[in-house]
Length: 97
View 1 (cartoon, rainbow, N blue to C red):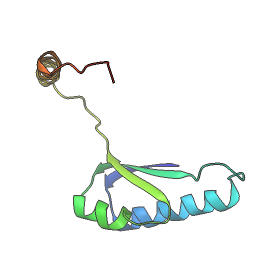
View 2: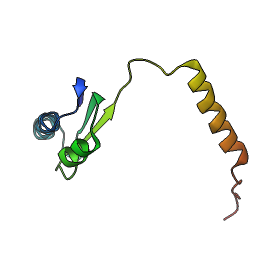
View 3: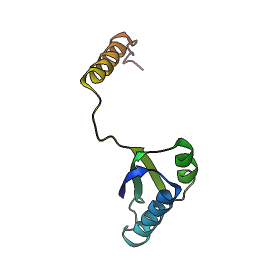
View 4: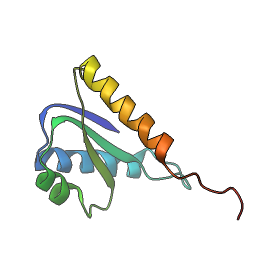
């Protein structure tokens, strides 16, 4: 289940998603099927709210921030160059056991 929030993640959002996932597990899943997972996409989230509202729920509920605008071209190029440099300088792993 996916819930798109236009604002900041709140503890109420976590509770609402938990209710949705619990309902789906009880009424929509078939025996032997994996339990449903909830994903809350929000404009921003506070780490403490996310941790305490989402941890240790009997259902799997996660929150992630979304972006409505891509980073600048300059920033994207910088990240790609950094990733390329890391790949080129990383020690190669042996394929032998």
